[in-house]
Length: 366
Image (cartoon, rainbow, N blue to C red; front, side, top):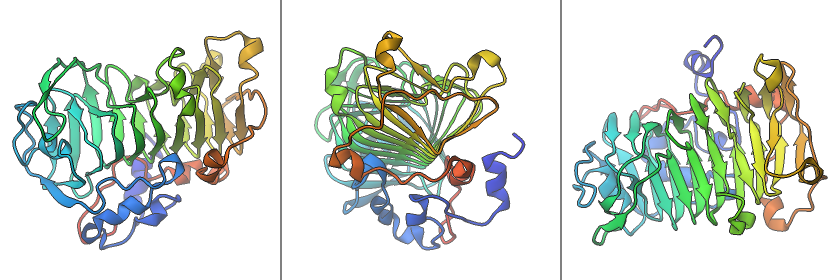
């Protein structure tokens, strides 16, 4: 793609352009102080420390031959331990998962310094807290069978088949997904549902997928009313159709993202979510019928236009249309305190210029 983020990145020295990256990037000793990343979460996942304070666990074996009894040195063995761990990778590797990868609490999965690809199945975060997933490429996930799958450092448990999500977050809190690349799954790339809250999705690159980010399970799950989630500094690039994100019930800040088009819509929702769209760049597709940035679903217009969907500092290009609704929300202190200050939408491309997996070499700025 002419003028793409990756091309610009290759031509420039390390430059940290957004609030999160300025916390840790461009320091040549990053590999000697990996756990400093845990101090950098912003948005509603602020305070997420992942595996900080735990041991470093190094993935040396890319195989995934036995989901019930994984070998030490595999990713599956590390993520199922019932203790804080900071997980890194010995070398470049493609890990083709035979079953969903069930992540325990207090983990950081840190791909910096290696090219790490996850395919076949994705991550499941079920009723856990305090997880960071950083610097991982997740692609071509598919439905995988259930069976006996290790989900703790005890005996394996019986799991049902997985739907093929890239990252499925269920009933979990303090979850930070940063600098990942996600594409080509059979279901959602990131699903956050069923009582999950305190989630930030930041600095990620999304490509070639139909339904990208779901925040809220369905209109019948009212406990998602307490969901707080931040979508910040992401690049929605080629082949993205819809759900960037799709929201239900909760309170969502969508801030300083770069939308290089969409198929059906960019941001959608139902069940009266509050959505603050701030400082985003929305470049509409050329199709005259698809200029609307937002889609409100499953309610008559007389109801949906009462929902608090606000636009501030957004840039609308190529005929993009953002129709706001409702009024500026009266925020609780919890909702207010973790908002990321929005920069003007004209800055969105620069703020997302390093979105996706970074090329990090130990001893050099990342």
